[in-house]
Length: 385
Image (tube, rainbow, N blue to C red):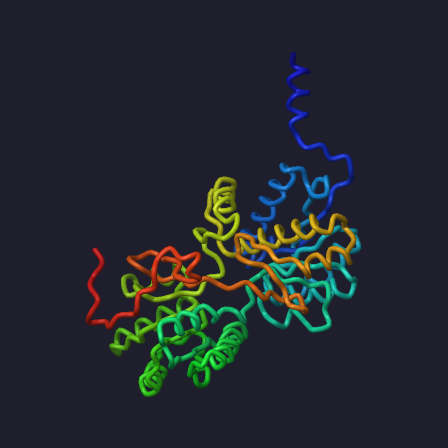
């Protein structure tokens, strides 16, 4: 009887007759970035568990080979050389744009397909590259939703600001270019120092220009300081968008003054993107925590790789490359479609607005959980009950 029960249990499990398919990546598992990158690692482990339970890839079990880059982007090159030399079958990129840029060069030189999961800067995708494919939302798309919202509401004059760092400047520069194409008046991008607390000069400039919208790229603390200045100066643009306002830390910093601010978020667990409800539920069940955008980026990269391999039908790198180049699909992170360089052409971040202390998705409309509300004058606001 015992042997019969064991046989029944074994028969219910997937049977893998061939060698496993090995997916390799280098992630911070020690050092200052380890805690931040752990969500990506957990998402990859969840995907591995799910795909093996469903029969694996091409009928073969999936194994992950995850190396530790010790939170040093300079280590990415030699670690991806090591993964390639150890003959891993598939590559998912490391954590962050700096490490991704180094690792992508190694993969391209070796003609190995490489999924860029978290590298959002345009410098990762060079015109000559053929094997690098981006699943993360590019920084160049971060202003798209704000501009669409502004145009839909009849807003014509914008104030664009950027924290003085490469990623914020890249997002703002592209937003300015896109604003011009949409017939919106934006002027020059106003750069502010890291750690800035005084936005009096920028508010004065916005008033003088008659700016109806204030769109800023930076961190939660930057958004909080802007709101403090707004209240002190009785300034309230019709539309206030600050990238950092999507972070829970923003609400903690300014409390009820966070109301009506709009943030830019690459992911939200409630978004009705394909498979997101199932992913969020499975992640929470396995790890006793809600998935953040880094978890979604890791999971989306693996799902894109899975779908491309299914369509290619073989592990041949050229056929897999062609499948990824032609693929149009959607993951919990959003749509996937790439340009000739392998850079994302379809992904757009969400806009979330703080309404009654909660972050609600307001754009795209198809994914919205609430409707956008104009940013009211300070004297018209009432305390939340």
